[in-house]
Image 1 (cartoon, rainbow, N blue to C red):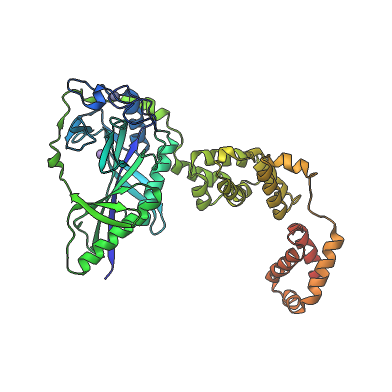
Image 2 (image 1 turned 90 degrees about the horizontal axis):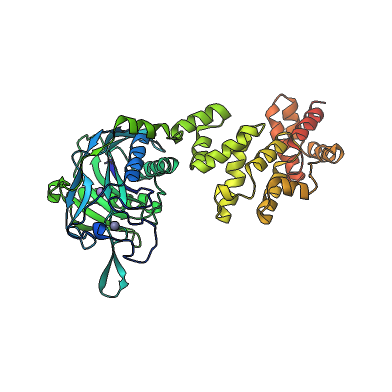
Length: 478
Ligand code: ZN
Ligand code: MN
């Protein structure tokens, strides 16, 4: 019996603001506990909230980038529940009139190609505080520095069909949010958090089955693992004659397991009602347009343009647009180099790995984009070999110097155009492989690749491939 998995993600994203959503307290990360608080975010009686305009602007920016309809009027609502890190006894959120609805996020699924996932809604809310269980023995501490930090909640439709798709969706979402600069999306710092609704059904069924919500997925690496564990648990349960209960499951990354936390609340359990201390949120079309006009080119459009402009593949474009910085740097080099395609290959095969090994961001690369372009041109013209380029890149990273500097320091090395040594190698290879020579002369021209390989090996990668081809053709045809 084959099973289908249905996943929808709810993503909470901390907006990049200096101050909190409804008060002037700082949002800076890492301050000592309870030092960034005031009567409003402590929920003291009589304190009045005032909405943060910068946060609203960022939320609208996110909604527009996701293709959502931004509503001219939306309403803040109280979501009532008790929790030790929620001093007010309610969270200010949005309920039946959210900021934005009905958007799309296109992502690349390894199983289904491009998938257009629905964004059901995007609303503004404030964060709660943080319960800390490992600071004092047998006691839980509460830090309210996060209380009132501005968030958007992005609710995706049940459009994902595997844990791998959930990961791809989340990666694409993170990339988009980083591109438009509304969040640092750092999962480790809690600025991007994801809850997943998961259900399974037998292949061919169309109705949705009972779902569970998986929480506490606190690192990117765990998204796929946590959802796989929960999917497998549900399938095993149903196959053994049981049925899935609607509940919240907590993921435990140490055990790589899930355990039930509580039965899942329905929205009526929260007794939502409009926040009486705040006016409805008005985002007029003029403000929307102003924000829309400042959106950069979004990743999807950029990928399409890069494929068209530089003759690179869809796959190259995927990798090279992973971050805006990487795409910017690639384009800076691609614009001045003779072969943008070679730049794309170099960045992926020679630069990214070396940066990763040193823990450097693309902006911190010792080899500038001018250097990448120059080195690509040198290989393109046959002046240096691929092997020489690798050695020069190694030197550049070792010395922390740009490509051109290292190239000068090494006395502008050039791959050998001395044909006599190369001709000797070729003669020997032709002499020791009569069978392949026969095949070639009988018309099987592809055998030339075999000879090129042999020559490159014999010259330890130092020979100029163009020259090798020329000489081989001359000798084999002659
Ligand atoms: Zn405050
Ligand atoms: Mn929420």
